Structures are given as C-alpha cells and as structure tokens.
Amino acid sequence: MGISLTPAAARHVAKSITKRGSGLGLRLAVKTSGCNGFAYGLEFVDSTNPDDECFESHGVKVIIDPRSLSMLAGTELDFVREGLNEGFKFNNPNASANCGCGESFTL
Image (cartoon, rainbow, N blue to C red; front, side, top):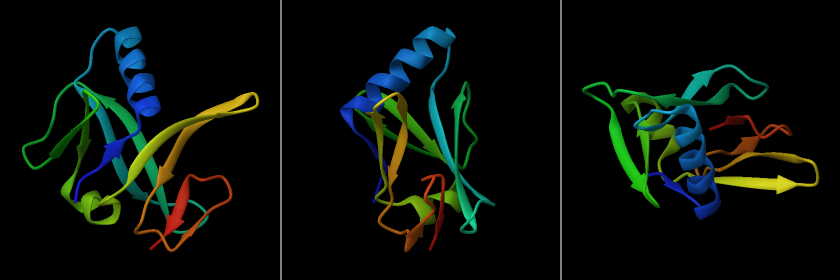
C-alpha cells in the first residue's frame, strides 16, 4: 500500500519545489519523538537513497525510507487552511492515537 497526496497537498509541494528552485520530491519519514512516541518528518530531497521507496501522486514524488514505510503505508497527506493557519494534515490509517497538534502519533 502506497502513500498519496491530495490535490491540494500536491499543488503546495509542487509550488514549494518550484520556489526552492530544485528538488526531486518530498521525503516523508517517521522519527521517534513527539507527545505520542512518533513524529512525522517532511523535507525536500534532491537525491534518493538506494533503498528508498518512491510513490507519485498528482505529479509529485513522495520518497520514504523502508523503516518509515511500515508505519505510513496507506497514509494520505493533505494540505489544509483553517482560518489564518495552514499546514499538512496526515491521514494515517496505522495511527491508533494522534497528538492534538497533529504532528505526532501512536501505533
């Protein structure tokens, strides 16, 4: 099962890569930290590692390391605007609980 972006997230990432001037896509990773044990990590990438998994959604590449893939399989990344705030929202079917900030989760 892969990773997908909503059209809004893909537009935001594509616009950010264009503004940045380079990049292959967006790396989505999981790191140990946060309120609930795991936190999401996002960064633009210019190159991939040999063991990375690459998915494409709405013309944007999402790169994931094998360790993170098992915790993120089936995740949909959205970009939402609520009032004056905007940011990514992770719809992760593997998460059993999410932090109120939306940046950390428990499996």
